[in-house]
Image (cartoon, rainbow, N blue to C red):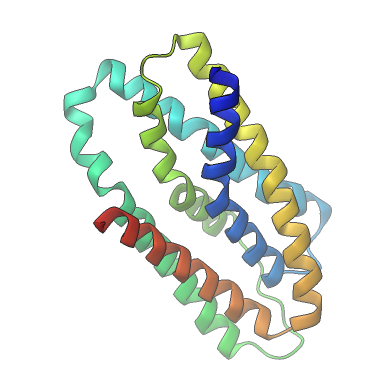
Amino acid sequence: MFVLTAMLLGVALAMDAFSVSVANGLNEPNMRRKKFVGIPLVFAIFQFLMPLIGYICVHFLAEKFDPFAKSAPFIGFALLLLIGTKMIIEGLLKKEDETIITSIPILLLQGIATSIDALSVGFAIDSYTYFEAIISCIIIGVITFIICILGVIIGRKIGDKLNNKATILGGIILVIIGVVILVKALI
């Protein structure tokens, strides 16, 4: 039963990372194969680690961790707003044939921003054994990797056609994801 739950959690948690993967593919349609695999890998690692960190915190640091859990959506919103706004500005300022490269620091920030909500999954699986929790987190990471590969492919296909406007669209997508995270937290 926990495997099916982990698979469903993996799909649900991967949606933000999928959208950002599409935005990254839009931003850089001619990216190298290394980055093509690296982007989904970063998101998968963060989606694996965050629920595991949440699980560990529930078992060892529960009362000290609660204030951070409540602020996590606001942190995710701020990071995505910052990155998305930067992409929009760069898209407006770049020349027609210029591509903005997604750097490792930006990718790491995206990984944090899109996986911070996965921290709460660790709280939800607190009744699992340590083994079940690790297997669940692995499943979540693998599903995220697969979904994000698809996101990069879709973004690259569309990005080739949109050229200069792709970075602006990618930035807008990131800002929208951030707003959605914020609205979910406030409701």
